[in-house]
Image 1 (cartoon, rainbow, N blue to C red):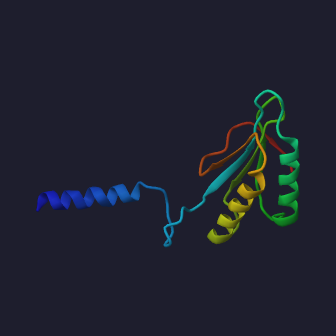
Image 2: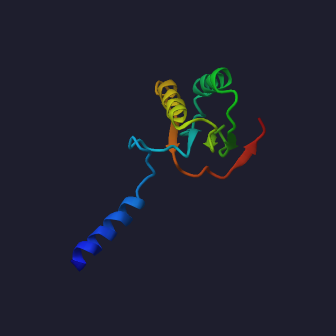
Image 3: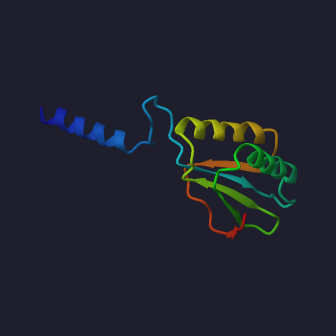
Length: 122
């Protein structure tokens, strides 16, 4: 009986330590970063321009930080406390991934803190 009780407690604690999920078992997006990086030849400027246009045209109301962190134009777009419903956050992230999937030199990092760098004014 003791072992069953202990196993139940461990199972509950293990479940609490996993990523946050909603009732549909979809990962809850707290934040994400779109990182335009350079392997020595500059960032993908066309990708950055496409993403800037996308944000301006479709998501102008969103607040985010732009952080300059390299010597070749490396920049991160940090989205945290996204002012959208969970469904729309998921849609926004998917649209971001779809748009940028055709470009190189881009990383999309989910649910991690933004890098330190120089915050740029909008």
